[in-house]
Image 1 (cartoon, rainbow, N blue to C red):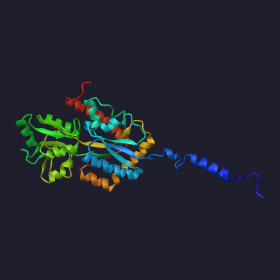
Image 2 (image 1 turned 30 degrees about the vertical axis):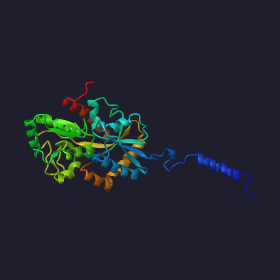
Image 3 (image 1 turned 135 degrees about the vertical axis):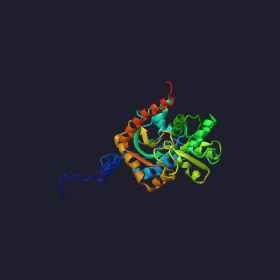
Length: 332
């Protein structure tokens, strides 16, 4: 005989209990509700450049690698234009849930000082992690009437206002770095903006411009003899072109280096930021991503969330000083 205080559910009671259990959220080992687990659906990562360029290629490699570590697809969405700032602009008003992210190029700290922008790069963004940097250079066509950067300066002085150069967008580093260099060299150049490397490189290969300032994704064309590399813009020579001097080595004190990383809207949950940081940081250990960085001559530059946030604050102030020095600050 069974004890009278023992409850033995009948079939109807079992079905009722099962239905109630199904309606209850699952508790993960960490104690977090399954429906609140992050991430649980695809993440959109905005690449603010045209498809097909070096930036797009690297962002797609980062997204593919991050997908493995985060456990959900990271889908790249191209939004080219306005000097690579459309991704940052898209963060304003976006839900700070970690499912909409963007690349944060250096121009987002500069352009707000040059023209009215719909975002503040310090107040309106969460800086998750810095991953990579650009190597910039000045190149010319193989038939250009100059073979060194000194020759180019001499030609520009002898032909004032006649030398055009293409760059990756008004206010981008390849634009302002050359303007600063030209000011120090005492020459006048005519800048022509393009929407990133995917438009710029075909323009110089097609003979539409004679000189360009951009990333080292022109390297294959330099190696094939179609283009000539005149100088790089970093603090050190490129490992890929150790015989090509920097602008500073050539006599003009101009150094332009450009780290970039991943960011989202302001107000993101710190736990979500940590998850994203860890997932994207692990991409720097992925041989396929490192191979892509080598392909486009980009160095890995890691900064954690705190360091990247501090970098953003410093850079926003420093870019203001640069823009004002070049006389490019907006009037109001």
